[in-house]
Image (cartoon, rainbow, N blue to C red; front, side):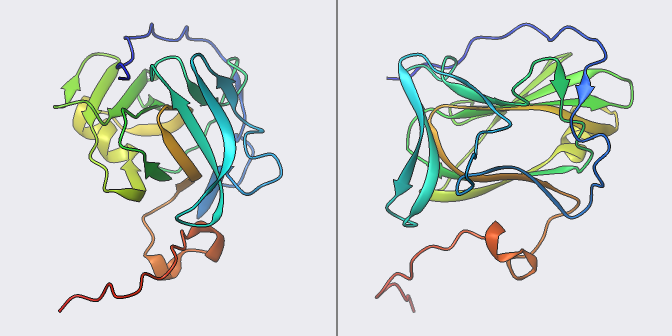
Length: 212
């Protein structure tokens, strides 16, 4: 049985290198795509009693990143890989195409608000209720069976949890246990027909699945 992560200390403040500071940010900004030649190029891998590897998912017949571990707090990927850097992504929507493996799963996003305070949001499949503390907000997460598109409105969460305005995302951390197709930021939520083809998740057509 996997175990939830322990509370981690707040990051030390400073003036780190901002990765996307000079990038024109509109539409979509992808930080992980499992089909690319180096899908984890921007990410640091941490593994203990588990694995992080690219495999073929049978449901979508395509390559995905699998993050597995007996303890979710000790197997994870972090972006940016360099702890002295931050993402500096101002787009307010974080979208993740994730497969539910029916095990404990959690992810964390560190943002900067207009009070120049770093806030962390941690969403977990084992969390029962929302808890807001000074620097971290823990949230429950419910996933459907199979593949899910998780849409996280960082601007709305920052405002509702802390009464402040979202400025940018500094760091993203994806823990065990899940499979990842893509992780990206967007300026708004897009309908399926608005998304570029490579941002969609194509599931094989299920036969005899029509219901009256």
